[in-house]
Structures are given as structure tokens and as C-alpha cells.
Length: 400
Image (cartoon, rainbow, N blue to C red; front, side):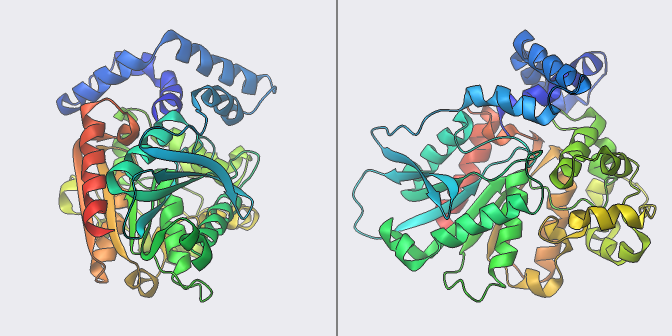
């Protein structure tokens, strides 16, 4: 998620937060939000809300339409050649350094965020990130699109990304773009981090894929939908840009337009009793470092309706919730890089994944941004984004 999309999501909270005291160390990002939240964005949000209320257009569809104005064409520059094409019918944008290389290049497959509902590889913030990555790493960067909700629901997003990645990993395709098959990685932010984690798990179980990923890089990923009452969700009413209610809407939209699931998620009463064994994989009482628990006592989610999970089984599927993978699957994952932010409802998803991967012996580099918040990674031009991107690119330079 980037500036335009996230700010549109934020407008609804501005009036409330202006009169709500916030923690001192979040003051600077909050000022940033107020600075770049304009009257035009407020109007966009109001129009989207009104359109949904009147039954004219789905809220996410309207916001997606507004975000299209932030898309840029595939334009080459002095350093990078940029083309739009398709991998197995899935649209992708490819970034290729112009300077000559005596050796095969790194390859990075990037998946944009947007709550499985918004965004595209063509958004200016993702276009700029991919250009910088290709130029700085001397890498071939494939930035993929995928079907978005509400038009498409799970597993379409996963299937599109997996199909495009498998296509890229074919020997002849890697050879065509001059990519070293020993130096290929996958990365993504937010919902893109979710999809990156999911396809990486799937690849290690796919006997038909001969090229294996060297690394995965997950930027504040969403990794589970079973417990919407983690400490980061409990704290999240004060967080900028992505609140618990907005995240519940994104999760539910991933699976269905039926708002019943969203309501059950907000009550943390959507996991049926017969699936309660899965909660061991997202039990924050054993997986979170003490400093993030802040003295809170774990309470297991109240069992929900079996009918809901039968209608929308996706929220119990490991392809949608990578934290549900068993230890054997996790133990075979490649070198992993994870960014979490202190003021992010998805913070604890990432922290629990770090713990689970470390417990099974996976090499994990974890960068926690103490003054970070969801969406900061792609706020180009701001110090916090510069810091996060530098850490990310430096890690890829060393490990990919």
C-alpha cells in the first residue's frame, strides 16, 4: 500500500484522531499524515462511501478507480528499460538495467500491497521502487499484478501470483532475461507480503519447479486471519493509516463481499470449534516477545459458526494465512527478511512469523522500525521510507 491508497483509507479517521492524544513517539508520522491528507482525498473518500451507501458502487472499487490516477505508463529511463507484458496471462511489468553485465543478474519477483483489493504494479510508488531496485541491485525486477477483490476473491489472487512466478522460474524464461537461476527471490509488502510468503511455501512443495528461491523479503506482511485480537490489534485504534476495522474489511473482502464475515471477525468469533486446533499456530502468548505483550493476558477467540467457515473456508487455508503452515514446511523456507513496524496492526503477524521460522532453524533477518507505521515503506521522499528501503536493498544486495 502506498501514499494515495492508504491516505484514502485514513480520511475517515482524521476527525477522530485530531482530538485524540497520541503517544509521543508517533507524533512525527502523525504530522506527516495530516500534512498529506488533503481536501481532495476527503472528497474521494466521501464519494466512495456515498456510492456504496446508495448501492452505486462497491467501496473498494471506487477507491481503486481513484487510485488509477496514480498509475504511470511503462517508461524506460537512462538506467532501466521498462516493459509491460504477461506471464501465463498475468500482467507483469519488467525492469531491466541498461548497463552491460558480464554475468547473469539477480532476479526479484515483487508483489504489490493493497489489501487484495487495491493497487497495481503501475502505481507510481511501486514503479519507483522497482526502478530503484533494478538499478541499485543490477537486477531484473518483475512486478506482478493479480486479480483484485471485490471482482475476484481468494484463491484468485494467490493463483495469479503463483502462476506468474512459476512462469518466471522456467529455465528458458530466466535465460531470456539473463537471470541467474541460483539468485532469484520474491518480495512484497502488506497483502503482497502475504502472497509472497504463501507462494514461497507452495513452491517448496511443488516438484515441477526446478528453480528454487534463494530469499524471501516480507514487508509488514499480513499472515493470519484467525485472531483479530492480537496486542497490535488491541493497540491499533491509535495507529495511522491501517486500523483493526479497516484490516478486518480487507480480510473479509479477500474471501467474500458478504459483510457477515467482517462482522464476525471484528468480534473475533469466526473460527469454528472444529478448527480451533489451528489457533496454536497464531497463539501470541507463546510466539510474541514479552516486550510486545505489555502485560496482556491471552484470551482464545470465541468459537464461531461452522456455517461461516463452510461458506468461506479461505480464512482457514494456509495459502491465505501462511502462519498456519506446519513446522516441517517452514523448516524448508529460504533465507528470510522481515520488516515490522511498531505502529501497525500487522506488527504481531510478522513478529510471530519471525519466532516460528527461527524455532525451526530458518535464517531470518528481522528489522523492527520503532517509529514505523503501515505504508511507510513506500512513502518515497520521507526519511522513514528512505531508511526502510535502504535496509531492505542492502540486505538483498548481500543475500540475493
